[in-house]
Length: 384
Image (cartoon, rainbow, N blue to C red):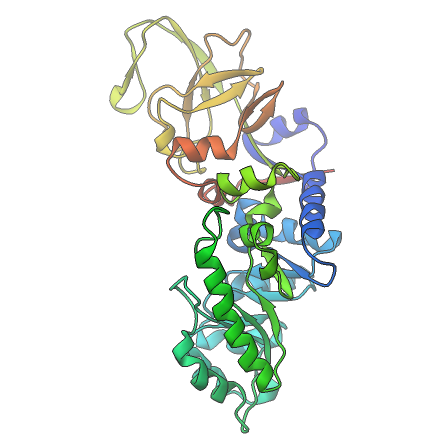
């Protein structure tokens, strides 16, 4: 949905997300420049495109030229297909046995990462089997076949009765976010190569992929046939170490801004308590502004009395508890703050910024969690 101008937005919505299309294109070009021309690029759009809207972001990034889309579930994949998205899609998460046929119907590739799932899929006739990406555990110790299972995997994959449609082979790195400690990731790459060699020995040449955003930046030897760019696609760094290493060479552009409005203001006297349980007592005569968002929208209670938002280009601190649907701000030092004023929760206003990483540090979390927890019912507006 596109809206023209902030005034129209404020007239129609109490809170909204703005997505910068130019920033999407910028980040895409950055990662294209990082990998070889022969290497495919998958945009990971799981979890509502990391909070940026699954359908809209996927359509945008496919239009720009991405090769693959990575989703968490068959549900997300089917949603994209029903919206006319034709790019190759890989389900990175678990697919229920009862939905395997749908993967074939909608031409969605699925991950197989354990013997029970592989045996179930092997029961399907070749013409009904979806394309598979075999995930191997090289050290993450989460999903994936262990190296000791290699012979059994190859036996089922190459069985004469029902030769499976193995399209891909991949792994996931556990600690690829710090260039100062590469040894573990190098070991994972070496273990993946054992799988690659065995596949080749048996005449199979699947699309091989291992690197996510960090791996793509720090470990060029792990580019293989494809990289999976998740957090970087949204202009966010996977870790401060990766940012320190790579920001000398290129910059990423955050694509998301989160905004709301002032619903009402009032003057309160010093000594008054504010919000549930009166957790904060005012130390001075204070002008407060009530904004209509809260923890239901994805603004955590962690920010009670410590968070801040931008009003008329100035920081306004959160006063008292973050409620389910309301937050109180101290706008005493914001001249002419009034109902209807635009408030920036994440983003820029008159040269001041509140970033996703600011909120992550304040909540002792990570930027991934901050953006994916923004309520998916909030309107995402893709700007021209």
